[in-house]
Image (cartoon, rainbow, N blue to C red; front, top):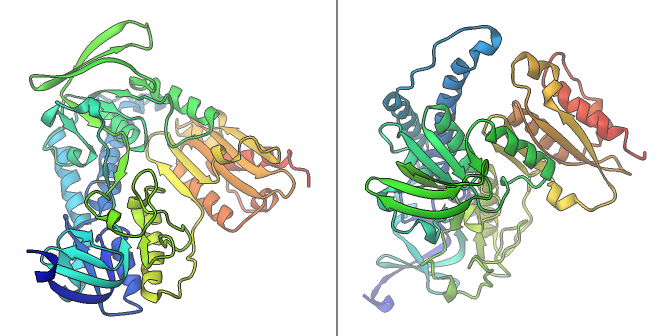
Length: 468
């Protein structure tokens, strides 16, 4: 059936994708018009709930429980080695995962069916979308199609021995061994969790770094902490990767002794990044300027693509692959799509990201990569190794750097690894968003004995370097 034979439907706003960005975009656009449609060609349920944030934290929580038993002897408490029942671990993960997905599905079901369209969308031009047997004519469009795991050519031929993070949460039990490729957020979180649950792992990197850290001192410290717990080579020298029966044989140079080794794994977990879901979207049929990744160039304050009535939000723009960022972008994009052409800048919060490994890693505000080389920047430092409350809990591993403007005292950002970094990062992000200075932050209350006293130490170190 050609386009002339397909039925036409006219709407004010069309949202492509019903995920963490698409749903907030729909709700925001609906404040301006009831004539809108939410298009989804895949499975309902956000990446976060189904294969991302929540199931991964369930796996990590199980790993933390096992690890606490294994390390209890440090407190003088003698226990036997924990027995991990892989089947029960995965049953709980899938059960709770389905519960979280259910909440998302409830939200979608509460949207009137007249607003739903289940099929893949493809641009015919800036205002027309081909969706199955329909042509949708939209005054404005929001692209919120998300992202997918990126697979490198080296993995070709591994068949069902190759998995991505989505696949992990469908396991009925834990495997014996997993080789993890990519020491980024997903690779480190899942790799360490699997290791603590008794799975033999080895983590291979390529670039020589732990992403997303840009501060070399923090990065080097983190690398040493993880290497002391499980095999990790951030710049692996691989000599071979091939399927061998129901396993994968990997030949590599061991960084410890420089000798070639051969090791077999039940699975290879590809955690080598994510790609924006723009293939087959027909963006070449639009007037939009595309970047090197074939993603539309957009304004991060309005989410508008060029001067068109097309907006983009969430993982598909490949900037901050985080749920809260996707939701914020979705709200901005949906609001502006609904009010077009009278668009306005939306509120963007201070950058905040957390890696839920142990110790946790966090980045707040401007990264060191953005600030290094600037003469006006001072760095306040703290080692958690001697921090009181951290030692009490046997969690005294970590290093924090606080960045501040030498002349104004303004808090600029921080990168750190340490205990309960998720909570410290929130305090810092609030201070950053409020544009607080280091002296003002030091005026805030600090209880004793708490980990936050370590943050105060770093702030004091930065404060003595200020030229106020």
